[in-house]
Length: 138
Image (tube, rainbow, N blue to C red; front, top):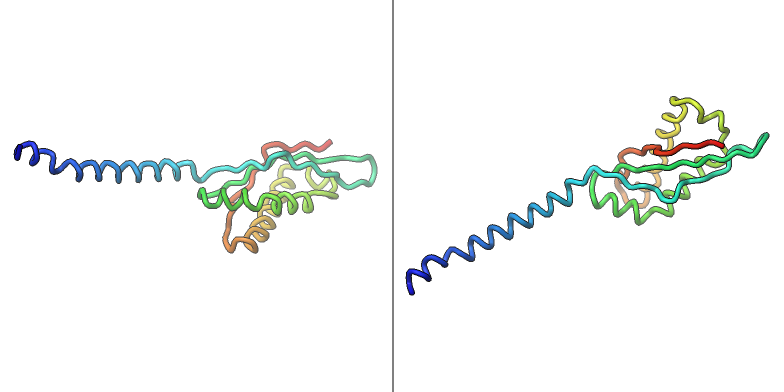
């Protein structure tokens, strides 16, 4: 009986070690998805400068975030994000967004304004980059 007791006396230590290792593995798996991307759904659709024929812009945007906490903050403040983007994009001229350089400049401006707005609400940088995954002017 003592022999059995001695053999299994280390069992709780081994089990505790395995559970701890599994806990760290699941944490690492959760963080391995980051940096990650949060899509802004549905697409942002705005009217462009009405001088002349009516035009609109439909843009799909993905925000890059560094952590799961940043993703949660972005989701929490999504109404603010969408409002700022609609305000910043609406009423622009289609000619301001035709070239690749113009779209790069626009992307940088939108990122700066989003960081400012989210920083006011959260006290931190939530979005590390934005990407246009769809961009249609019609």
